[in-house]
Length: 233
Image (cartoon, rainbow, N blue to C red):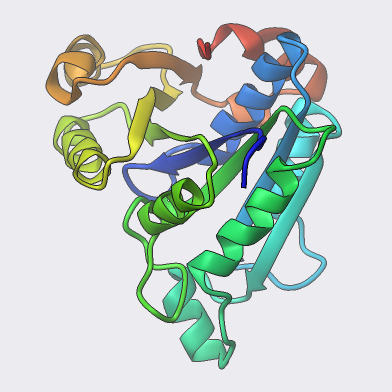
């Protein structure tokens, strides 16, 4: 398949590192570049039907944007475990990739943001395929795919970040760079050192940092500031 819009997968060094707020900030920044953005979440866990999820938060912060949630599971676990315990058959990673490629093939879409679940090697189907495998499948259908990795600020993040980049590169997947998902007003010594060392340790660019508490901003304040938090070119 040719003529697909670019796809950026937002993954993390772990869970609760700020992927959703980072995704919302990216929507604001990409729209400031006059790009037509669609946001997709292949698997959402820990919520019942009708409850506001990650894509709701993206729209709340960034403003209305087209979103697609493929699968929702009630248990707050990794997708494969949540589906197994709920007795649900998950779509395969190849099926997820086909749906994303269909969106990316539309004439009215310039870029698709895909928010992952947890970290890069979280299993998202019953065949033990991961977020990384989703990138491989997207490459196989002709999509131009890059990964942005959201990392924590504190002690231990250099190791987690380096492992994530190594896993991407071993699969031939492109790491576009890192974002610190929650940067406090008064960072400690480890945080300040990590900020300085992250690019050299991982060999990937530091694209920006999200202020701690950004997810609690008013939509107006978020949209007025978010484009300056991350550099996406």
